[in-house]
Amino acid sequence: MMVWGKYRTFGLRHLNSRVALLSAVLGLAAVSACGIATPSENRVLFDGQSFRAKAKPVDKKVSPADFTVVVNGVSASLDGAREAGRFEGTKFCIKNFGSSRINWKVGPDTDPQNLRISDDKLTFAGTCQRP
Image (cartoon, rainbow, N blue to C red; front, side, top):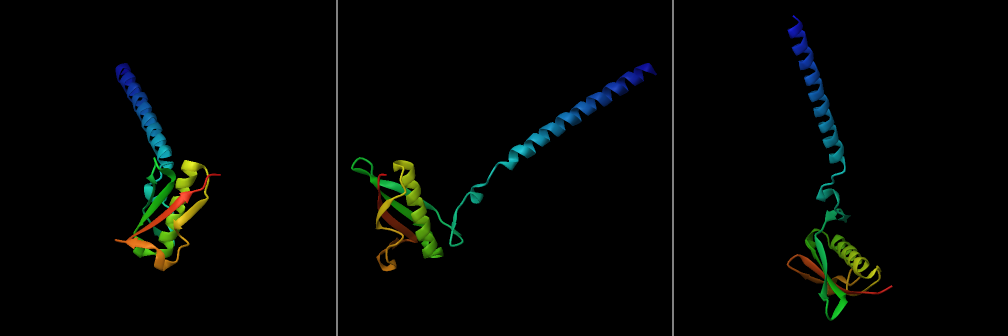
């Protein structure tokens, strides 16, 4: 009978430690998952739409401040695409030159008939102004 008691006690302790370990692992997994944001949660919406936009320098060697912004999906909303382009251009200038001031050649405030739209893409051109 004593032998049975030892194994039974050992078995319960062993089970309790496994349950505690499993609970700790699950708890850590749940807490760590709380801070994970999916890419769609980080998107900024313009006129209720999400636009893919990219700003890049025209020629870094000649003039690193000159850049273009291409916004995809302009047919979803012209106003939204304009603001997405403004946003992307502002991010580009702040990141590379520390200023949000932009001299737009073709930009978000350009008359609609003078915008560069081709293949459902809107293209802006501007120059970052140094602070």
